[in-house]
Image (cartoon, rainbow, N blue to C red):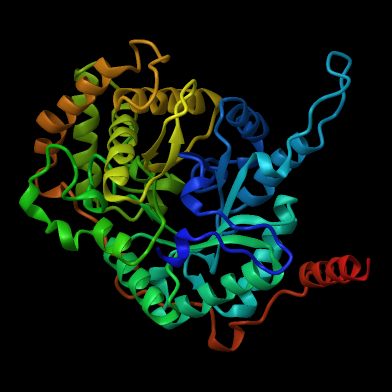
Length: 440
């Protein structure tokens, strides 16, 4: 048994069960609560989105200090639910408890080209996240976009997150996140070798989509099995490195796999066009996918979401990096892959949850209460459309991944500034509260 799958505890604290027994199978990603996706995140119905997610049974939330105001907005929404205001129609509202939801954030990425993985900055970032999110602890913290720094820096950051877990009790589980799958595998193996303890989680984004299936090869249904040696496949490597759970995010390729797509140029001033790292030729190829989906009576985002949700639920479970899942009305515990989905409206949220429920039901892991619109017949249609039309149309762009970091990247965080934390009262407030608790 690896250390990750053994219940552990810090002095005076409750046991820490294996992550795969407590992590929800579907998380709401709040990278969309940011100017990279919407013009004014503060004008989004973020409170309604979070409240509706909870009501629909989506109890996991993923954020980051790098996502602009995301932590602040998510924290405000959760705080309102934990401290509800009585109304004439509901004079005694039931407050949301901290144990009712699973909260994930990240640390280390400050800006587009600025990173600080020093222990003092990681600690500051975590304490600031606690304050912004109005919580006493974080369930899971990743080092954010770890390919932009050296392995030595990643190791130091992971060790500090584990210290915050073991000595200060403000973090429960520790992981890494990033884009290049081979880098994630290399780092997971290195951390396990150097520390004797595996990572709890690895978050991969943009690598299990209709366009880029690299994370799940060769387990993807309909893919050429000879493309990747199963023993050296990404999921096999991560599993061997003791990683408990691998999460899949950005199933729409950060907006690439949508009906609107990414503008080929940023002439119109689109923030997404300027920010998105995809080459123009790939953007054009994905616009062709949108046309093929429309001809089949579908929206590309719906097809892409459904394919990724259903296939990842199956593939991650098959590879042994999923989580426990119990169907409503059943006592049987099964494994299922964990997905992180971002939305910018409640209708998008409701469609995502409906697609997820339908995807799970199509795997025979849940009673199909979603109706024919999202049930097994839809799954069959989506799989056929993807395999027979979308993949052939992509040609050489199938499984293409852009470089991250891009050529010429330089970390603009000066060496002399690394480890220097902001004097904004965050650390002082935490230390004061800690002394107060200790003196009781």
